[in-house]
Image 1 (cartoon, each protein chain N blue to C red):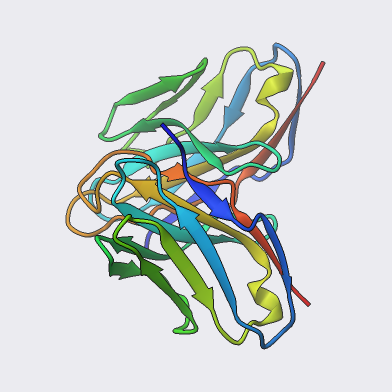
Image 2: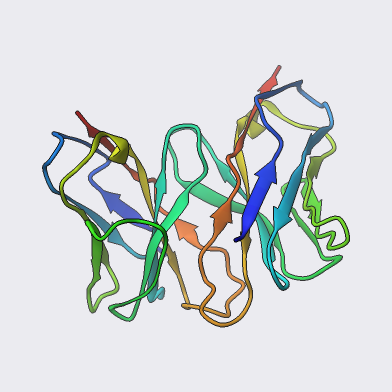
Length: 115
Length: 114
């Protein structure tokens, strides 16, 4: 069974640019969540996708958007990058959207640096 | 809103020492509680969990008990190893409905010296 795979592992972008991060969920998982982890902080919830629909969002502006595909893989898009967007972006998958007590399976993350 | 407060680090111990990392939470209802571990350069791995009051989660010698009366979920291990060096995150997830997100503490860096 494969785990959660994220790409790329590292990325450097310039302020104002746009970026797309990708995530392949674990086999059998239909739910994907994205988290932002700033240096020295705990992960912060960005949003969650269940069966290709966004079904929850944290306190992030609309320039953070996402997609989920029929194979349950997902993308995180960030427009108009700001310096404070520099962080580790983590993708997590789960076999259900809500009411489950499973811990999520996390990927290794994409380290985004905005200069 | 929901929040998790955990012991500030870093924590430095010698091998075979006893470990405690404190975690307290604020949430409505009856959340599920988790400990995740993050090794250098890696994502988060679920270490253990508890879903109701007085439940004890355990894994790899680590234990934590869900204490509703003190809203706590402290992580303990009787004898740490060098390989336990990592960042540990306490997290909660509300139960039921669409309350699916994990709320994390800031993390505690543990370094175990031989």
